[in-house]
Length: 443
Image (cartoon, rainbow, N blue to C red; front, top):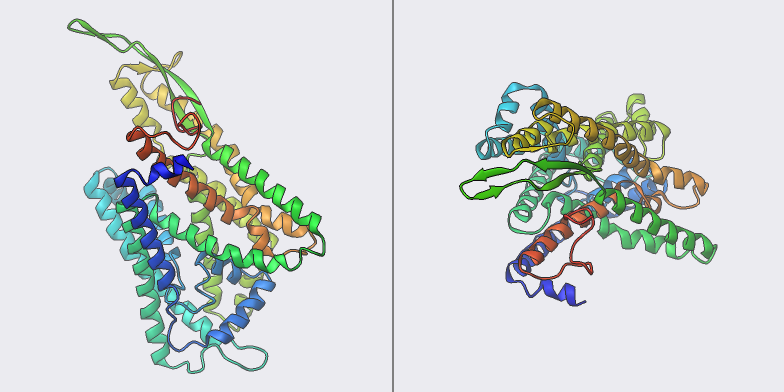
């Protein structure tokens, strides 16, 4: 407790935590504002049926913090911004204009952020059209409609409201990243997932008397999975580096041995978020064809518990893990910096040979980490089938899959920033030695 109290003794860190909490509070309170023209009672009944049937709508509702089932102005969540970021980063790998922007430093970064915002508005506009059409087509068995009056006024107001809500969430995330702690977009997603956790566990609590040993097993399983996820997130592969001695005047520089800490999971949680954002795309397309066989086929094959959904989801995670690793870590730049500073890897020539050597090791350590991410992501489906569909998919997703990975990954990244502030002010960290394994010189 003393180490947690140290957080509030640092003025700068205390202000950042307060600002982050205030922004997240605004996000949760703003999500309670409903969209005009929607019958929330009918929509809630429909979403309860969708959750019981383990459809993609239930998973989507989890990602947006339960705001879709509440017909909130934040129904689209932050997913349009993530989709726009994916597109811009993909263009940065193939389009020379975006490659030039990535190399222009701060000015290029600002231009990329501006283009990402424009893309967010475009994608949010398309998704809001699909959501408004889908909401107006929902009817219960008793004939009750989610949208009693599906006039042009409803579509116009809904589209403007949902797009504005997404832009506001994007602004909140950017404010948290600039003036708060952690990545604002990731914290908003984690906040939405954690907000649904009490309702999920409350629904399962009433069934605990049927077989209490099952829940003891699930509690142990959740601890083991979380432990493994943290272990992989903090694991590193050390590449030894030797620096040559240089004599400048009377002083001798260099000559020491060091290492390059390559994280086993360099991409972190971003491949999961990127892949999940794309997996919502088929359902968005299906919303444009509410009463057709094509739309029904997309909803069936891309429901979270379907085999096709698991295969596509796992492949996207593996692809995005390699893609994001290539963006986050550039072996050529590392080799050039080592060469300028007189460093070299024992047995490897400086320059291109060094960059090829680092790239080869990075490729090898990324393969098992990408497969690990894919297995954890589809683990809820395995658990769901192992219990013969006796537990809800929402509960199973908290024992693996996207929810747990995002919560653990974002928590570790935020904890890293908190600890860096504490160590900078000569305060001890959260562990006894004051350092987190995998994030310091001592591993």
